[in-house]
Structures are given as structure tokens and as C-alpha cells.
Length: 298
Image (cartoon, rainbow, N blue to C red):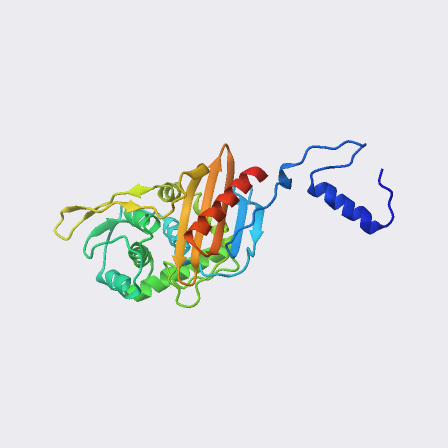
């Protein structure tokens, strides 16, 4: 029996007992609860993990600190496209010269779309989310934005991205691009990106796209011939590992390495994000730690 000397010692003893999973009750010790599993240490500057079935927070590290998001921005681009009323995924979009010019000027990642080819909205989603094609992202923004010029339409689309962010409760997020190539004000947080991912993954189309490892598109050329594109490979090397279902990588000189992820194993569902990892290897290690930790917590 513990004799109370002062209130502080009682509270400290209780805290130690809970932390170690021991509960003093009628002289008996109970087994450690699942919640007592040790939280991992990650190298990324920001991280967040939730039970995606319930929305319960499982892990945080600077989860509400605003950071550059790189190509994880494209999750929102896909979300806005897939939220369009009466969306027809087989609608064809002609690749404009402005798209090619943009890719060259920015040195941006590309799905190697060819000017004049007709590509379906569905194919553009794969081209954006697998090889992280900024050309596919711009083509989608141009298609679903409103205005008389490419510049006006893409700006309008970015406005829709910010409207969507507000509707999802992403209070620490702002987009100034459709692909993550920031113009000075493109940022989010691990918590906000996870909110976005949870919403996006409710779309069967989005979920099917992001878990795909390789996709070969057949586009229509200017002459009406069929062009078989080189296979688009998913940049997410974690796909399939321990139930990993996606979602999107990101990298950049300032943003470093980012990943928004989801995984399901034996009915246990986790989802989260890491931002500003120092290397691709560290990003992978961080996410593996979080996924395993999440399964243990659930």
C-alpha cells in the first residue's frame, strides 16, 4: 500500500502506473493497454497519424505547423476534379502548347503528354498521381477552371482548391498552384493533408488510382491514330507494403521529401502525412514506423 506524503507524489505514482500499463486496483495488476505502446521518433519535421476509420488522432509532431507540400498538393487537384457535378471520366481533353511551355519553363515532373493529343480525364488523373505529372495537373486545372484564357482558368481552379480546403476544415492550408510548384504561398500541415486524404479516399476512383503501381494510357493523336504511352510508374515505393494503399509523394528543394499515406491491414485503418523529411530513405522509414505504430495502437 502506498502512503501519501503529499499530493504531488500520489500524482507522479499514478502517472508512472498508467504509463507502464499497470493499474492499482484491489491489489491486482492489469495487462498493459494497447495505447501504452511507445510512440516512434521520426526524422521528418512534421508528422500526423490517425485511425482513418474513426478519425481519432494517434500521433502528432508539429502537426499544425505550415510547411511546403510539394506534389502532395495534387491530392487536392484530384479532389476538386472528382467533386465536379456530372463528371464524365471519359471526357477527352486536348493537350495545349501552354502546358508543354509550362513544363519546360519550370523543369517540372511530367507524364510526357504530347501537345495535340486527346487524353481522357481518367487518364489525366493517373498521369498526375502516378508519375506526378505537372502537365496532367495543369491540363485538369485548365479543363475544370472557368475563364477565357489558360491563365484565367487555372487561377479559377486554384480558387476552387482553396474553397474546398475551407469546406474540409483545413484551417492552416492555402494553395497557389495546381501542382505544388509554389508561387510563394502554397502550404499546408500534416493534420490538414490527412483531413484531405481521408475525404479523397472516399472516392472509389481516387482510391483505385493512387493504389495503382503502373498504368499504360492510350491517347488519340491529332490525326486520330492511337498512341500507346510509355507506362506511368507510381512514385510511391511503399505501395503494397504492410497494407499500404497510397497516397501521394512530394519532393522539392525547399519542401524536401513528403508523403501522404494510407494503409489497411486486418481491418485496421491508418492514414497520415509526413512533411519535410531530409531524404527519401528517411521519409520511407518514418512512414513505416508510423504505420506499424498505428496498427499497434488500434
